[in-house]
Length: 311
Image (cartoon, rainbow, N blue to C red):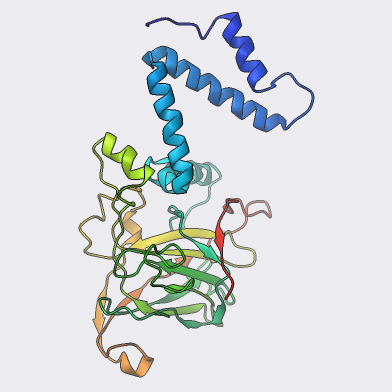
């Protein structure tokens, strides 16, 4: 078609009307954002000469994305969630905030409601014959290096099949398997007794993988463990570490890998005395450094829809 109509009065008026930009009621911020996004979409249609068939293919894709419940997964896969982290990193730098454990993406698989334990939690609720025992432990400190007592450390990861409890399509896991939360002790210590995770791939028939197939990208992640860490007078930390040695560490479809988030994995014995499934086990020490509030506020808290379950 190769025509340009975006700058015509008819289209400018259409955009204003569609977003009710000049109306006195409604959410002003929402209207501003919608107007900008529609304007950018219309401009892309003009600039790339996107055909009606392609537009409707996109609309149909959005329908499938919603039916599959994969919008948050796609947000990670197309770099949107990573981009938000890049912006927050830049905002910290501009504000002179340095240090602290690096943030990285939350992903779509957190579940609220896990019981909170003191200091130590055993989180391998369901048996997994293909996963060996793992102990994750460390200390939570503030930016000055002082231990933070009573910090809440939340942890979640996949099983040996790459499935997360609550979202497991096989139904083999209870809601809070491989999920836990502990309060640090007086010395800022925390510890999780769990099983070694593996990475996961996007559902092969899902909308996210469909898009990735179209641009010749894989949808796999390396083995990793997610964390939220929060405490009074500190900013909430959202992060995760990768399991050392995983071949996909630097080829993560969700772009979550950071150099500082690959702790060493060590071999230890004595697991039987700890109540682990075997005497030989893997051990990962991972220490968290929190950063202070900004003008009395936590500007790292992200409000988004999350799953929840009852213990």
